[in-house]
Length: 311
Image 1 (tube, rainbow, N blue to C red):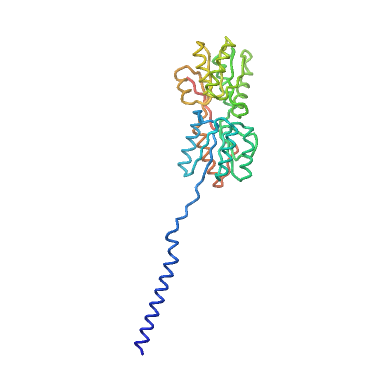
Image 2 (image 1 turned 135 degrees about the vertical axis):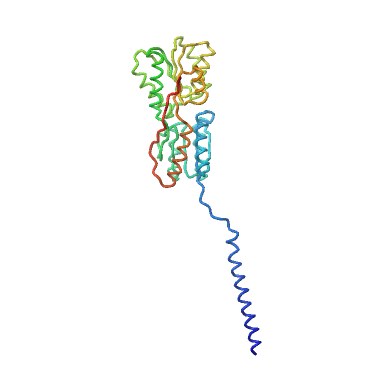
């Protein structure tokens, strides 16, 4: 009897152990195959007005460097200087549920509606280089374009001996950069009674357009002494037009300090350009976005220092 009881006890114990092991195995299986949880990756949308412009390529480079370093994903769209395209692209990024938007507006007025859409969706917006006329933004990161316009105007006036006829080539109408640089430049010119601005012409921040526009102005005005353009693409186009027309002795001043313009300053063909540090603007934009998402308060305006590049 004792042997029989012992056999039954051992058998029962073996059954309990087997069931326990089976239970443990069953509960452990999904844990072993489940993918480990990782922190949610930050996705940043960057909308640039025109990636054919070297300035904005540098902005993108700075933003990409910061995103890579900080472990964020950067989605970049080129609006090709078309505000309608920019609106569509930003809406698509909102549909993809980006965490934050960095926007360099084609048109400061037109961008307001899509910024408001981002506000409604709870997606924070930071404006880059150019500001927006409406909608709520966390921060604006740019150089002081008014101060840059004054800087360019005063330097051009000094080079001309505070007398002469000059031309202003303007950027895209409606952009804050064109408004502010023009405001600063014209404020500076108001102090020089012997300087006359013979023409204010829109050249759309575009090199080819500026070349065509300035070629026409050279035909119209035989005594142009100086030119200020709201960006380097336009000043380089104007210089090409003057060279092809055989017009010498004109003082040229640009804005942005892109590589080709800096080279032209070193060669002496361009008198000066205002340096904005676009790579720094891109870097600061991404860093500010990530800090904001981490709960830090962002300054409403983050200025990037300007410098005049000349010989």
